Amino acid sequence: MSRLRISRTGVAVVAAGAVLTGCMPWQSEPEDKKVTAAAKASAAAAEKATALKARQARAAKAKANELGQIPVLMYHRVIEKPTNTDDRTPKQFRTELERLAKEGYVPITAAEYVTGRIGIPEGRHPVVLTFDDSSPSQLTLDGSGAPAPDTAIGILQDVAKKHPGFRPVATFYVTRDMFGKATPEEQTQMLAWLHDNGFDIGNHTKNHENLLGKPKKQVYEEIAAGHRLITDLVPAKPVTLALPYGNQPSTKEWGRKGKAGKVSYDYGGVFLAGYTPGASPFNKDFDPLGIPRIRSMDKKGDCAKFCSTAWLDWLEKNADERYTSDGDVRTVAYPKFKAPFMAKRFTDYAVAY
Image (cartoon, rainbow, N blue to C red; front, top):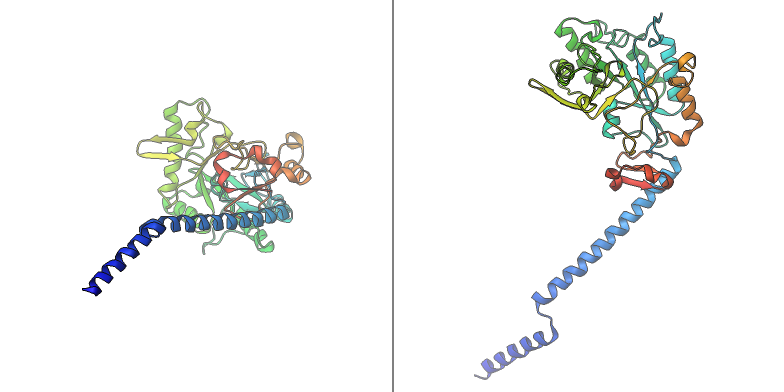
């Protein structure tokens, strides 16, 4: 009897004590969780601040400016005896590539440019090499599937071997001429080689049709035909379009997105034919409907100011205006005073120093 009474009394006392002191498990657990959550949040914030400082220091050391301008160079034929101002000789082409390599440029594709996947080393500058009209002088393969040494790709690969870090990549805007190949099998060989070797394939319309002033239906048909020309031959969808002659359709959006029959396209960027460097994809001035390119040519005639040699000279003299990488593809680094040019949608990736 006494044990029972003692036991009950003990239980009653313990229970009462617990109530009085507010230490019941279901009352203390939420408080513990709040303390733990606050500690974790504080630790995470401190870790984030430390990481940001490290990224800022790295960006400052590299003099990073990922809101700067990017040269997009435009090439056509690379031949020994040029017949128009769009042509370049193999020597001229090689000389320009050598200059780019020595001045710290690293080639990226048009697809990488418009999607912001600019993964190059810190302190380096992106350059986009583009080739229009799919000329045999750009790519010719021998019987073993190797590019001829005097073609654009042969020269690009040779320069890349001599300059480690200079990526042998470029974007080829193809038409039905398809590097001089007529049969679907031969055309597949050419596009498959480009795709398998890391080159980017873009749409230039099937028939190189001037889209200026054309009705909406025809614009859609021409671009869709060029899109299908590529996708019928290789498992690669073009990400960008280069407008024939650089001429935009009446409504710019028709060039970026449209549909004809069962073929639809939705591009990350539409390229023009001239005459300035392009804006960073992280800059609020970036316009995916009309991205400028620079014709490859020496400083003479109408190219005294607006072609590749002139613009590369200007970017070299105005280094703070060109895109310089911080080496981290996950961030967008730039000097604080350039913050007004930052596109708001990339704010979460910003590293201002």
